[in-house]
Length: 140
Ligand SMILES: Nc1ncnc2c1ncn2[C@@H]1O[C@H](COP(=O)(O)OP(=O)(O)OP(=O)(O)O)[C@@H](O)[C@H]1O
Ligand SMILES: [Mg+2]
Image (cartoon, rainbow, N blue to C red; front, side, top):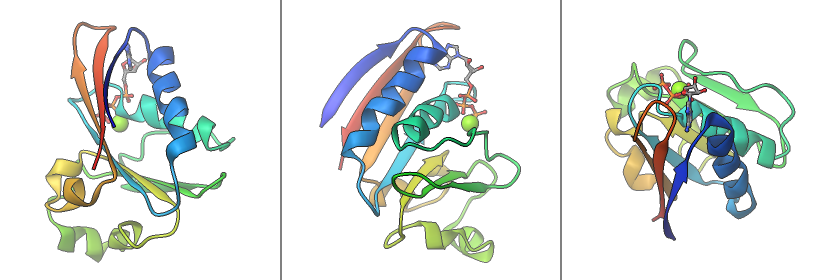
């Protein structure tokens, strides 16, 4: 898969995430690449809705990872403050990478060598203006 979509609002970004849910299967990793405030967490909120998660998804920034129960367990990682896989292992988060159970969505995956490479789906978000984003979705 390789498609590019323009999201003109946060609601449209959530919709992109929700539309991804049907193709997600157990063990998948999704990398979300894009600058600060580009809408990575917003997309994960939609993905969570699509996975029938009813909890409110918030940015995992300060906890590094959060887990939600739905059609599949969703692990949401923010790797912004992490720089190596061994650092991730120190806090036990390497368990959320293959062969993990559930789906793992990672913001700032490029901070940790190896995450983008093991991802099944890579979402690249570009800021067009303060409301519009270009979203490129590719599968590995
Ligand atoms: N088209 C759009 N898509 C996504 N978010 C948008 C859009 N237009 C405006 N926004 C706003 O931009 C902000 C995006 O925040 P969000 O937390 O999703 O970004 P993020 O990429 O996760 O940031 P961070 O790198 O800090 O984790 C929200 O306030 C959202 O309402
Ligand atoms: Mg975020």
